[in-house]
Amino acid sequence: MAGIYVHIPFCKSKCRYCDFTSFPDKLNLAESYVACVCREMSKRSPAAEGVNFDTLYIGGGTPSVIDKTYIGMIIAAAKKYYNLSPSAEITIEMNPGTVDESKISFYKKCGVNRFSVGLQSAIDSQLADLGRCHTLNSFVYCAKLLKGENFNADVMIGLKNQTAEDVQNTIKVAHAFGASHISMYALTPEDGTPIYTDYLNGELPDGDEVAAMYAAGLSCLESLGYRRYEVSNFCKEGKESRHNLNYWHRGEYLGFGVSASSFFKGVRFTNTFDLDEYFKCILSDNFAVIDAQKPEGEDAREEFIMLALRTADGVCLQDYKSCFGSDFLTDYAAVIKKLSHCLEVGENRVRIRPEYLFVQNSIIVEFFA
Image (cartoon, rainbow, N blue to C red; front, side, top):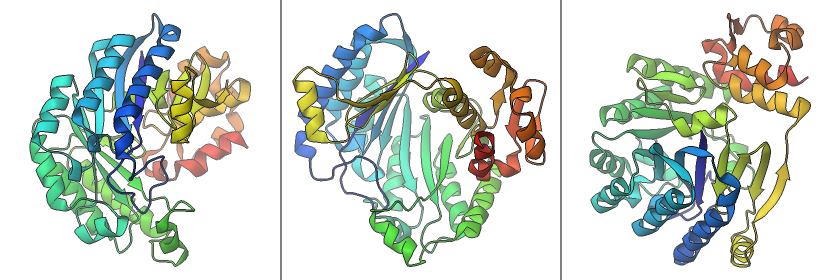
C-alpha cells in the first residue's frame, strides 16, 4: 500500500516558529492552486497504474483556511486518478481558529475520517508567544465539533515560560476533549524565524529542561492510556496514523503541491518551494520537481535504519535482510555492542530502549559513523 500527500501552503497568519512553505497573504490564489494540484495529480497518475493507495493526507500550511469545496475537489481528484482504497485513512490538518460546524460536516461527507488539530498549548499566553491565531477556547469549540471522531492533537514542548506542569495540563485538555492521538513535539527554533531571536536571547528552555518536559509529558500520556509508537507520537489502541507509519516503514508515497516530497518506485523527489514557479510548471504541462535521487547502497541502509529506529518497534531484522540481503546484527555488530546499554536486541527486532527514545538522534548517528 502507498500514500498520497497534498500540501496546502496557505494560512491565516505565519506562526513565529514556522519555516514550512506557507503564505499568509495569498489566499486569493487558493482556487487556482487547487486546480493545479488536481492537474498535477492527473499528470502523475499513469505512473501509478496498478498501485493501491491506503492513505490520503492533506497538510500545510493550514488546509482548513481555504474554502471547504476546494478540499472536496482534492479528495475527488485523488479518488478519480488513483486507486484509493474504500477504507483509506483520509486526514486533514486544521487550525482551531479556522473551522466551523459546516466545514467539519462537509469534510466528513467527502470522506475525511481523521483530523489533526494544532492545539500546541492550552495556555493562551504561550499560544500568543508562538503567533498562533487561536486560543484554548477555539480548541475546545473545535474538539466539541469532533466529538466521537478520530482526531490528533499537536502538543509542543520547549516553549517560552513553559513548565513541565504546563505540558501535562495541555495533554490533559486534549485527552478530556476526546483526542485519540497526541503528537508531542519539541519546538525547533529555526534560523530565519522570529522565534530564533528568542532562542539567541536565551529565552527558551535549555535541553535539560526540554527533556524534563518530555519525561513529564510521557508519564502523563501513559497514565491516560496513550501508547508511544514513535518518538513523538502517542495513541489509543488502534489509532496510529497509518499515513505516518508508511513514512517510517519506508513505504511509497506521492506528494502533490508546492514543496511536496515523494518516494515512489525507489526514487525520492521534491517539488519546487516557489509558488510562482509551481504554477508556471504545472500550467505549462510540466512537473515541478527540483530534486530527485535514488537512495542506493549505504544511503538506503542508513535511511532504513534512521526511520525504523524512530519507532517503538525498531528495526525488523527480517525486513532488513529482505531489503539488503545481509544480517543486521552482523553488519552492525560493533555499533550494537557499543550501544548495548540503550538498545534492546530481540529475536527479530533491534530497538531503542523506551527511556532513550527522546535522544534517538544521538544513538542513530552511531550507525552512520
